[in-house]
Amino acid sequence: MASGFAPGKCILFGEHAVVYGHPAVAVAIDSGVRVKVGQSEEWTLEGIPFEPSKHPHISHILNTVFEYDGPPLKMEVKSGLFSAAGLGSSAALSNAIGAALQAHINPSQSLDPIALARMGHSAEAMAQKGRASPTDTATSALGGCIVVSGQQVEGTRHVFDAELETPEGLREWSINAVDLPDSLNEACLVIGFTGEMSSTGKMVEGVAKRLEEKPELQGEMDAIGRITSAGLTAMSAGSLEAVGMAMDACHEKLQLLGVSSPSLEALVEAARPHSLGAKLTGSGGGGCMIALAREPQRVAEAIEVAGGSPLISRLGAPGVRLLED
Ligand code: PMV
Image 1 (cartoon, protein in one colour):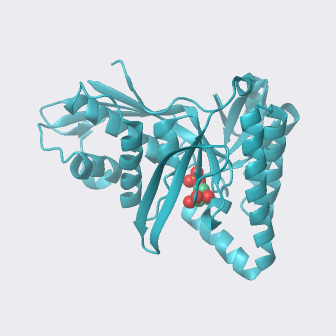
Image 2 (tube, protein in one colour):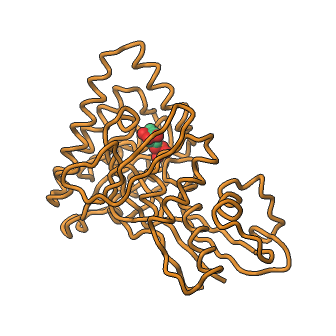
Image 3 (cartoon, rainbow, N blue to C red):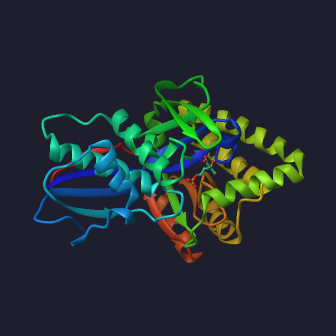
């Protein structure tokens, strides 16, 4: 069987502010989704009959992207990500199935991560009523550290541009990569899942409402933009302490925007004594927090004691790839 793997992601800086035109910085993580595809007598997913309407990402990639009309396929999906937790599990699924299908249909062709990122973005857009940022799919496809912004960001390497016709009009993004210095490998990210699922759409809506009621919150949004720039500079310089400080500062601003929750606060508080920095990641209101730590195992234990589920990852894992069966 052809086997594709795509990593999940977490946002280091810039969540919510990215909706208002500021850049967001995301890193690929070690955990992800593995998809195996092989020819079969009948269409199956995990050994049971495949129902396309229940799996919009898979159906979109099969039918619209690959226009697959070959013999039935058996598909196996194994995810190492918490779902609906801000770790980009649907983007990783889309990228992994794209990779596995390409390897099955055309084994001699090498993988093109940008083409897979575009493919995954179109699947996300289709599944989310035309509203999807390319952050998750681009980070999962390209790996490493990715900056998504309205325009190119200084100090980053431009990789490609993405656009999407949304219900609110055409949206355009610049996708940029940051080359991370080796010194950042001295620390790991510890992701802590609160166990509470969170809806990105609802959280974004809540922030928009609070901004309308209290226009002065725009100042916090602009501050997140400045912290994101400082965080990026710290990453490029390989200064773990400064990255951690920017994470703490970003969390404080996200609290003021009202997107933290008691469960996120409990995990951030548990992680901080053993970390260089800690913050919620993604849309908030549940989902996950992240901590940067030189002794990740200690932080993972503290998160577990505080009731969370930990995952340890490098800061910027490799992107989509084919695996040996
Ligand atoms: O929860 P996630 O990882 O899907 O991140 C959402 C990030 C937001 O900035 C809150 C929303 C967005 O569309 O960028």
